[in-house]
Length: 334
Image 1 (cartoon, one colour):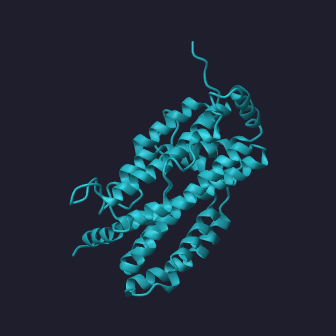
Image 2: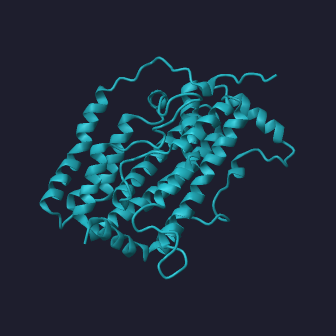
Image 3: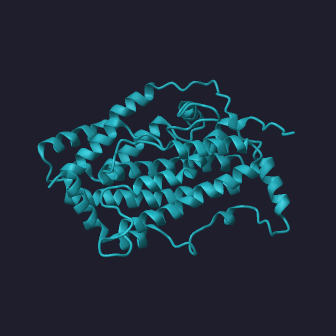
């Protein structure tokens, strides 16, 4: 049986528990928070006053903070790319062989529905803040969706689940750090909003990490080699192709990354700490049934965080701030 077919069989095995995954890691729309819970109520008598308060408080934080928040929002808004990519995995189809929904397709759609709220609420808040050029932000969002991205996983669910386990934890870190900065600046509503978004990301991370853990129990050697592949090639961020109007694909990603590091939103050390947490979550050192190649892969992966930590210590982030179009005043139209 070829490797892709083995993966499909493993996915079918996991699919039997997809209802358990949904019940434990996803929440129905009526029970979960919605964007309007954190935004001024347009039907309320204090609507304009609340908007003015947001605008006044938004003046307190520097451009690096707002660039980081814009980048987080654009990343969340590029959701159509992520859904289409996950729906193309081996073992995932729109419908099951016996008719009705494929379990994995149901998971992906419900996960997408939860994630959709993140970009929605951040977009509205940024619009109300008056701190960014929303048209430039919207152009960047449209480009990122149109450009797509290639994370080097093809249709392999093992590699993709490593990616989502890592990336959901990375977005948790980013939103959580934004929440901390907002709280220090007295922006309680934004802080609470980002904190609860971070909570969603952590819940989703735990789900994808469990998928990987279960695969380790069924197909340990191939799962270990897939983890090795992803970490050797590094986890590319969803915003890797981010650009401004009339810019080349990916032309401002490094500048965005620098801004996020200066703001303390997401740093090279966060990348290292995430891998340490994944190694611990999957109990990497105690996995049994590995072939020789997978044993060597494990040795490499266990030692990798300390190696990457030494590299992170040598990275120097430039102090000079790039002038993002997102932060420039919109031109007045005739």
